[in-house]
Image (tube, rainbow, N blue to C red; front, side, top):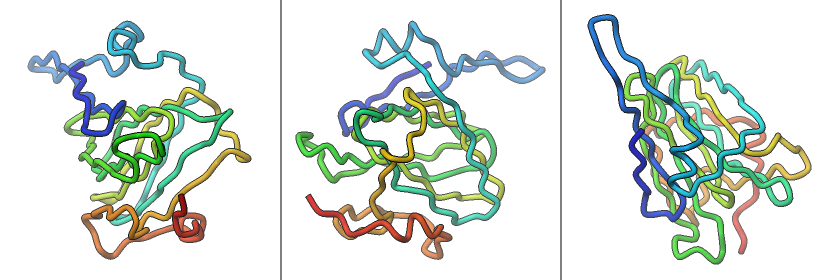
Length: 176
C-alpha cells in the first residue's frame, strides 16, 4: 500500500499495490504493520457498508464525539464517489478546510480519516457501495454532523443536483 498524507494532518489517501497477471489482480487492502509503521491506529471495532442507488446522492458530513470518537478507513467497492474529509478540530492548522479524492471500485483508493474529521461523499455513479472500517462502534448519542452545503466550509460538490436525506438536511449551521 502507498500512503500519501493530504494537506490535512492525519488524513491519508491510500493506494493499493496491485499484483497483476492474466487472471486479474491481488492487493492487500489493510495491514496492521503498515498502518502502525505510519503511526496510524490499528484497532478495528466495526465494519459497515453504504449502498447508494442513485448518482448524485450525498451522505455527510458525519462524525462521532468523544468518548466514542472514531477513525475511519473508507473504500468504494462498487461504482465511484467523490469522498470528502473535513477538518473540524479547532486546534488544527487546517480547521474548517476539506480535502477530497475520487474513490472507485476501479482505482481501489481508500481514505483514512483520524478522529476530529467529518466525513461525507457524493456518488458519481448509480449503485455505488462504500466499505467502512472504524475504530469505535457506532454510538447514536455521540453521532453528529455538519451540513454538507454549509457556506463556512465551501466544499465543492461535483453534481449540483444533490440527493440528500432528511437527517443530513437537518444539521444546523456551523458555529465555533
